[in-house]
Image 1: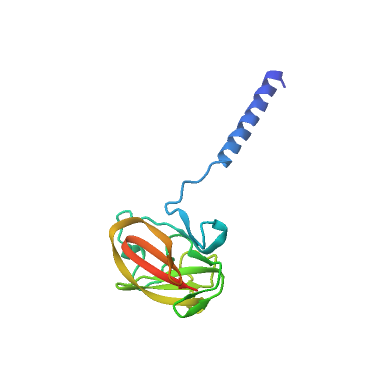
Image 2: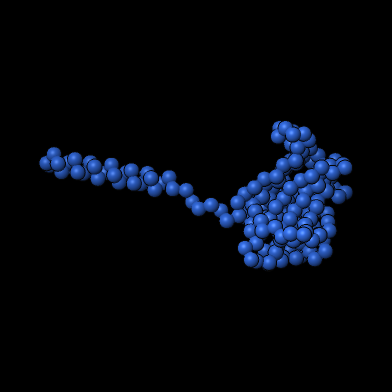
Length: 181
């Protein structure tokens, strides 16, 4: 084999390996419903968390809320994986005690009220395999109408007299779920 032929072959092999390696490092497109988290702390220090929720934020994109979260059907409370709720201390939802730990948080939308559900299943995609027998707590809360529409589904917390209120909003729907100590 001639020296120039050998150099050409080696150069071609190195180029192919580099091209393969560059392709392997290609990241996928961003998720259309990006993951988000909301946390409530006892103080301004993040290490003093009381409650945290991790969820994906679907967008309306001209669609109706009732098509994306149908009335009377269990909804994953967001998009993609079911929403994950972590309590860092024992709390109550309605009359039910909930031990500190990580749970799945579902909702059942309705015309005038929504049902909030804390369930022991974790690592669940959507609400396709929702199992009511694993519910730890349920409460019905009124749905109100906000002044402005929220394009992206959003969750936040606020301090309440005896605990924390979880506020959910999407479109003009607004729901507050009271967690108490």
